[in-house]
Image (cartoon, rainbow, N blue to C red; front, top):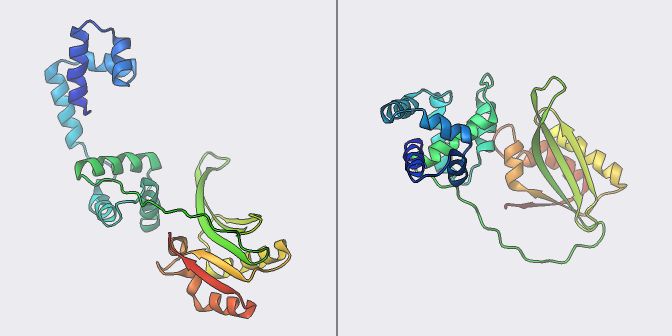
Amino acid sequence: MDKWEMYMEIKQLLKQGFSQTKIAEKLGVSRTTVYRHLKRSPSEMAEWVDSLQYKKKKLDPYKELILSWLRMHPDMSAAQVYDWLLEKYKDLTVGESTVRTYVKALREEYKINKETSPRMYEAIPDPPMGEQMQVDFGHTRQKTVDNKEAKLNFIAFVLSHSRQKYKEWLDRPFTTRDVIQAHENAFKWYGGMTNEIVYDQDSLIVVSENGGDLILTKVFLTSLNFRKLTVLLVQN
């Protein structure tokens, strides 16, 4: 329901004898919102709605770029848009909630529905002990001691049989040499190596500095060949 429709609905419910509290409950908004709308005359409301429509938003200069991302990747989340913007424009200062609101508005305006890719799940037996390890990358955003937001990147190792986990964190993107060292640290922590290592190909593309498969660099392959490990790439 847009703001004008809400205004008209509030007016109708008020005529029907509902209190402001009941109107707020029915429409799922706060009493403050109902009170603020009722203070405006129809002409004032129309003028206010028009002013919102033409108000320049902080992310308008990046509108076409964001639209191209959403059209190319309909399943893309607002969090991903936020990350891509910050990676492309280092000096951009914008909150994740602002990006979320902007992306939601673009999806509604241009009828770009968020797609989800259904996954087919099938129970398979766990591999034998010591046979397989899964490796994945990811990130999280945390508040620092001075109340700023910091992005932390991680690499996670999980033994497929026991589900025993090992994880390392960095406050910057992983390089190939970081990944190699993390593998060595994991092997030492586990007390040995598995015969196979499974990587999520999608996550490798995400952490790559060059948009390709970071794991397939010459340096990394040399390291794996030296260890005589079998590498499996999967794409979710």
